[in-house]
Amino acid sequence: MKKLNIIYEDKELLVVEKESHLLTIATEKRESRTLYNEASTYVKKQYPKNKVFIVHRLDKDTSGLVIFAKNQDKKISLQNNWSNVKREYLCIVEGKLPKKKDTLKSYLAESKTLEVYSTKDKSKGKLAITEYEVLQSNSKYSLLKINIKTGRRNQIRVQLSDIGNPIIGDKKYGSTTNPLKRLGLHANLIEYTEKGKVYHFETKYPKEFTKLFKYEL
Image (cartoon, rainbow, N blue to C red; front, side):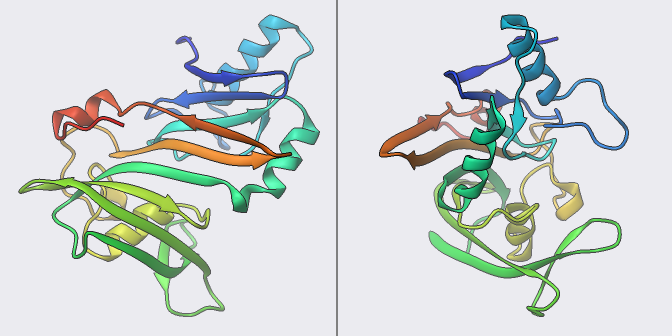
């Protein structure tokens, strides 16, 4: 087992950085190596009865920040306040964007094969809102800062694909290039306020991304 990359820890929280190609939690296939299992193993080494609880997830191929709660009450508290949590991502997409900054809005639904797609029918989909800002671009790719206002499954991937700029390495949603041998999406910032205290967690720029762009957070 690789050493858990811990960003922050206290008696109620464990914030870690997930690598790409790692599941947050097991699927029906019951995979043995998941971020949840690694976090659980870590806290049980401190005390055998310790537990961690899933607050949110990242896609398998997305890297970045994941928060675990150490008790059920903390999990429920965070999830009930999740709509007020600021979540930023860095991503690399194919091509140049039509605007320097923009807000993408669409209704997202899932097919029978669990593929997410945009629809104009409000009764079939749930509203997804994604803000983007172009940080850098070259002849092939653009580096974006993403701020999601809703937490729909695959929303960043689908909405960027909709405007003709799929995330690199995202063959499922239309990408034809994979220069980093991974999905070009990284959850780099989470911030929220609880009982008057601001919790701010941030990770460094992924090393792999520097092959295409030089950028310092």
